[in-house]
Amino acid sequence: MEIGEGFAGTGAEAAHINTVLGARSGPVGTAFATALGSPTTGHIPFLVVWEPNIPVTPATLFINKAAIASDRHGELTWGAAQAGVALGVTRYAAERFATPGAADGFVLMCAVWVDPAAADEQLVLDNNATATHDALLRGAFAPQPNDAVEALRAGHRPTNPYLRHSP
Image 1 (cartoon, rainbow, N blue to C red):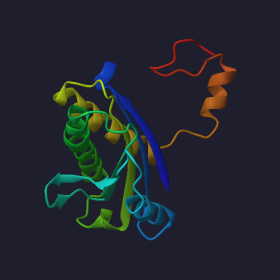
Image 2 (tube, rainbow, N blue to C red):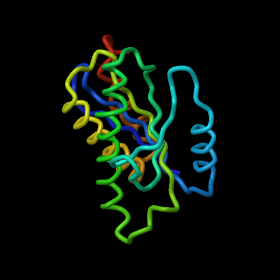
Image 3 (tube, one colour):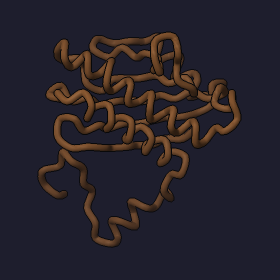
Image 4 (tube, one colour):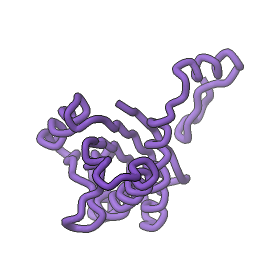
């Protein structure tokens, strides 16, 4: 199981992606099927496609972190963000799985943040492509488990784009 996180962009068009990649026949495959069959109000997982009737590989489940707040937010989530995820997954798959069909034994769960205030379709697409690709790379080449401890020992504080005060 490979767990990754990616963040790209600024402002309302920023993308924050969490990924879990694993074997179709393992616990990630079970979680994938369970999530697909268990939608909740405002959060309806769906398969990521390159275009209608052409799913990306590995099979990728798009899970929206923000409930759809408006027609425009829905368009950006299901359109630009989903296309960005498709692009990021496909770029990664082309780099990692050189042999055709090599990715077929894997599934990917992708939790995607699209800000309800987002407006620029191209930025949403580009940022989601970058954040997805980066999250998958980080999952495959995860930092050592003590990197956060070492950062703390060096005097660094946790931070993220939404943090207004340093802990």
